[in-house]
Length: 285
Image (cartoon, rainbow, N blue to C red):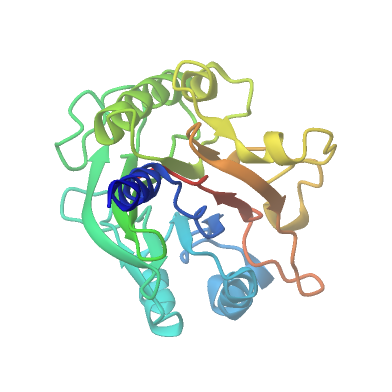
């Protein structure tokens, strides 16, 4: 009887401390769609929208962050990608104009919480601008329960200002603080977007150095020479790397890529999408 007791006790202790299986791979994708009202000649939204959808479908991300998305574009994504749920609001005080929306697969995630904040000294005030940017800038976030391993993750999608460096720098500091606030330095975080800043910009360093986030492309492909993500519809062949998927230290980075899909002279956007495949390691229970 005593031997049986010790066997049962040891088995229970082992089960209590044994690791769960590692999480399923998760592909995140950031994609600046280029607004629908742009005077873009042969690359107007009406001509490239199907190509943009094809790119998303081919990559099949679990989570997708889009920037510069106007309501007509949000409607098109909602209609053509019903397997995704989306969260986001427009950047203007009335919720109109450009979204930095997050899409996630309905069959994999359950939405636990969500919100949008403005990149300003008053982040809870819709439409607020205080750092020299002429246009409101936003970040949308979600807390998702992954049905595959029952763990929660935080995803943040943002679009920084294209003109004001003080606005970008302050946006980086605010975003780093929000990552800490939302995650409690415990929940895994993915931050993606169009940052309008190169990796060595102090605004980005506020995230990757002070904020302890890692650029997935730099981790997965450190020797990659062509890291341009802005193409200007082909007019900028060696454009800057301003789009990125960043992750907190909990994530294992398996791969990352810049998706340069086009149809002849037709581009899906003036930005190339960026993807990252990451995984959470096994966790003890």
